[in-house]
Image (tube, rainbow, N blue to C red):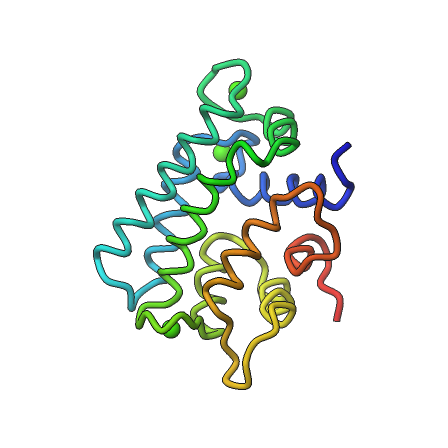
Length: 178
Ligand SMILES: [Ca+2]
Ligand SMILES: [Ca+2]
Ligand SMILES: [Ca+2]
């Protein structure tokens, strides 16, 4: 059985990925998100921006190949939640996506992500302001208010995992708890 927390996360992620809000995940949604994230990553180099666009496209093609059960070229909520039940299938694809996103958050390459850029990128993906800061705090930032890229990448992977509960990523679902 999928844990209730994981199902809530899956529904929240679906709503997030459905960038144009038409009730289905389609390639246009991922182009929209990639465009917004690239715009937010103003300090990143062109190579990193291209990598991010490619990562969004590959992530979409992977999801489509894995989850589009009726092969109509788009993913419904039912198809999406059924697929999240077996996250091991896309752990590798997710890891690559997470790494590319975290790299965009670390343009100087010191392995640390400052809160303002984290907020800008997460806002561009579509998360809410209060939830973003609750998540950043849950990641345990340093005295200089930074997190490591590794912490972020692990957080993204955990977010999709049905056997995790009480994780930092829960702050992205529902009302942030102060
Ligand atoms: Ca859509
Ligand atoms: Ca479908
Ligand atoms: Ca950095």
